[in-house]
Length: 479
Image (cartoon, rainbow, N blue to C red):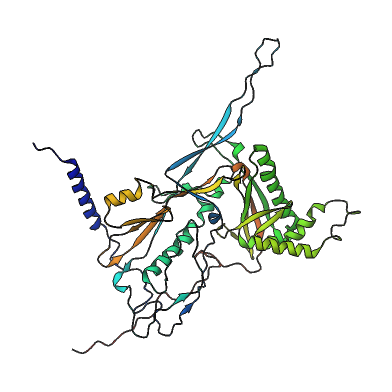
C-alpha cells in the first residue's frame, strides 16, 4: 500500500474548504442598500446644492473615549482583591514560655471579567448601482460640512472617504452610525445576564455592575463587603429646588471619602479620578455650583459674627462657573476634579419636565499613574491567531482587521452582484479598585430645554427627511 502524503492531503482539504467558502451562504439576493446616486438616488436631484449640513447627533463616547485600551489574548480574566487579614486567634500567654496567639490569614476576593462580543453588518448593496448617475443633470461634488462621527475611540468610526460621493463610503458611514448608537450605552449598562445562550452576543460588565455593592468571590461565592463601592441616593430631590448646598455637600463628602480618605487608608495614593454625568446635568450643576460652593460650609452656623453673603463676590462666582464649564471640571475642596460628560448615561423621564440620572465617581489611576479603570480588547492581530487562520482557511481578502486588531471585518461571499460587510469586536471593561469608586443616584433636575437625543427611540430624537428620491420614468421606445 502506498504511503499517504499527509502534507499533500492537508493542502487538498484546505483547497476544498476554500472552495466551499466561496460557494457557501451568500450575502442575500435582494439589495437593501439605498444608493446616493443614479435613478432614485438620495442625492440625485439636479438642483441639490453641493454643501450639505448634518442635523443628526451621535453619542459622544465620553467615558469610553477617556479610558485606555489594551490588547489581550485571554478570553476570561480573573482579578483578585485582597480584602484583608483575619483576626488573631488564641489566648494571651500567661507564662514566659507560653505560646502567644496566632496571626490571621490573608483573604482574597476574586472577580471575573468576561469579554463581550458585539457585531453589526451593513446593508446588502448591488455593485451595478455603484458609480451610476441618473442623467447629465446630476452632479457628484457634494461635501458634508459637519465633522460628525469622525472620531469615536473604541468604536468603528466613519470612513475617511466621502459618503456623499462614494456608494461604498455611504454604506460604511451608515454602518458606523448604527455601531456608535448601539454600542455606546454598554459601558454603563452592560450585563452578561443578557447574553444570548449560544454566545453570538455577549456583554461585558458595565459600570452599573462594577460600581456597586454586594461584591462576591467569583469562585467561592463568598461575600466581599470590603470591595463594595460607595453608593448613595440623593433621594429623588430636584437639585434646582433643594439642591444648592445640598448636592454640593453630597458630592464633596463622597469625593472626600473615596479619594482622600479611602485611598490614604488603602495606600493607593496618589490617585487620579473623574466624575461622569450627562452633559445637561453638568450644565445645571455649574449654574449654581460656584455660589453654593463658596457659601455652603457657613450654613447652619451662628452667623452673628460671620456674614458669608456680605463677603461674597458674585464676579468670583461667575468666573469660577465659566472656568468649570470651559474646562469640564468641578472645584471640590480646592481641587479641580475632571468631569466626563457622557450622554450615554441613562436618564429617566419622571414627567412634567423632570428627569432623573446619576453621577459616577470613577478612579482612573492609583499609585501615581497605574491604570485601574480601563478596557481590554481581544487582539485579532495576535500571532497564529485570527488573521493567520483566515489566511489558511479563507479565500483572498475575505477577512481583515482594523484599529490595531480591535475590530475584525468579514466581506461576505457575494451573491452574484450583491455584496455585504460585517464586523465584530470583543472587549471588556475592568475596574480593579471598586472600593474607591461610587455612584450618587436618584438626582432629579429640570432642563430649560432638553438636549437632542441620539438614540432613535429617545423622547427627544429628531428625525425626518427621505431615504431616496422618486424614480424617473422614461417612455419605452416603440417597436
